[in-house]
Image (cartoon, rainbow over all chains, first blue to last red; front, side):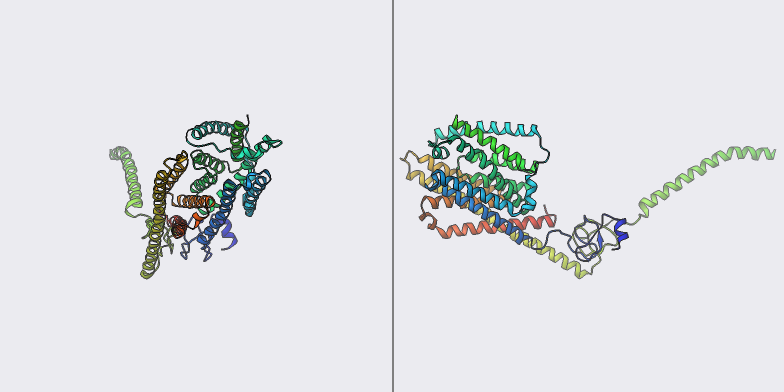
Length: 253
Length: 213
């Protein structure tokens, strides 16, 4: 294809196989019949590798979360903080694996106070609803589990640590791991809708509380939807922070 | 007189004549338009014999499905045969996805049975609900995932597999012996789910490429 031709018909592109100029919307070359696809032929292996990488990330999370929940080792403050650091590190490392693409998610485009206030309001309302319904469930059906707060009981600056460990770090690093790395990887494997469903369900069950699933799944679906709609992690981080902070203040006040 | 008459006639005829002329021109134009549009159509719209998409006269291959428009009969037949193979692949993937979905139903049933057994073992224990309710929640979750796996196979199979692995991890931490009990069944279940996930990815991709809804 000569340069003059190229200038005349700018919407033409060369066929991937024979080089004939064809309409970019065509799925096959009119000249040689080759499929015009940007994805290479090893798509199944590529998607499978991505899925395996995501499952490694998730298995690390499962291992650490069950370990902290079902053994007594992590019920002391230093070990608990160590676990938090490892979980945060895992999220950051996996997020950084594809830094060139994922850094787009850290850019806060179209910052708006109204939106931020709206998300905060939704988060606080949701936290109220969840608090009262969970309390009701716990009292009527189950014995309470004060896992988080009993660790810090009696230590100096307990409330500061509780706010840090329940509101700040989970909001930041869970969002980075689940809405950042995991959702972004799943979008490459499947369509957006299914990717949001999968990441929401995986996020909900990692909390290892089957009774809390009734609010965790809608919560995670909402943040996943916000993340896709706004194309930034920060609204989700803020929403998650407001929610956890409200829940946390219920316990402290 | 004659002059006058001719003049008059001319006067009478000429408007009619010009009118006739106008009319005939109009009819002529109309008929030409008709001929142009219907009787003698400009190059007819050609359609691909395989996918019925519109194709241009000089296209050697269909730009929508890759069918060899100008190819020999052999080329065209082998194209159709290859396309059949794609459909066989789809059927194969469907089968695997379906059996993985059935595995989720099977798991649901397994949890229902274990919930009932636990209920009767712990009948006199005050914490009976705390044990039985999570088991029934799991049964409901697997049932829902199995049902929804017909619609969104990948999401349900990945979720089901992760849920199953978490349950096994919790059981193993509770008592390491749990990990070994029924290990073959566990491996078979995980194997079916993984195969289903792989097929679900393949299915989505093939369907997207071949415009199958």
